Length: 397
Image (cartoon, rainbow, N blue to C red; front, top):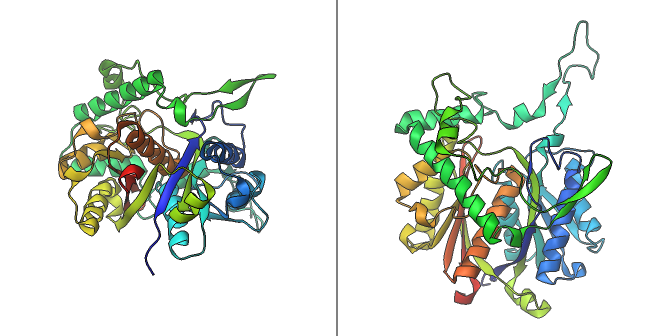
């Protein structure tokens, strides 16, 4: 049996909120539902024709955190027979949701899915791990679950320390990191001004004091920041380190979705495809330098497809830290003239469950608006992985 064409359509997201700001009071399932409904509307897709929601999430929050895929499915009006699935692959959870939806279609278990993900780190709880069976005596400690999310499970190093390890091993200095960060901020600012980002954002109503307002833009970008501003920031993870808040990805909240469907079924339903999924690759790398991940993942993907990076028109490589982008640029020979042209994790922010889906939306939109053919979406993952997905402009399929 030949593999069906897997198409991508629709694609929308919430604006991304800065940590502890506009989205902190919005339940994560509400963010997901908002993005999913906007995705359905953009694709002109009746929810009754969707059989699955695949939700990527690295850190469950709220009372329904372990069931968000199912909650979104029913809240969006999908039939009760439709299914919801939560998946997690750390910083690649949004990409994994798309891949999992594709795998279900290839195996014949799905026809049309909503795939994406999100995070609301602002709602991450503090927990107590010693009181369930009764504390013997003395004060009890509350643990920040964000600390669990940001520490390597093997060394207990914070993810920023693994970025310092990468800089050590490959001799990257701070000035190029700050220069990349500045470029990211400026590109995000340009994408906001041009309306590129607005075309993928579904405005959402948020509380403001006793009233409410409509939030229509990402609130983390700092497009007016200067290189001098970035140079003033102190290293966070080592006294004499290179990784700062300015050249690291932002802690943000948000959700994103895309339609993933069997090509023949999409045609039958009148869904207008934007791109198709060609292939993907996932690799393991040393956890202490997890930021190397995009390099071997992209190399493996290119080997699978018998392609070279020169054949790729556009790259979205997650800016977990600027050093990750510098490493990919150097090792792969990928020009920054065709990488992250609309900002990235450093400027827009990096909610792990949403990032892969957001980057896919950007890549789809870029191919559609430029007429270029191939795009790769890639990222490193905490605990030592790399992921890369190859998509193709539908007009070439």
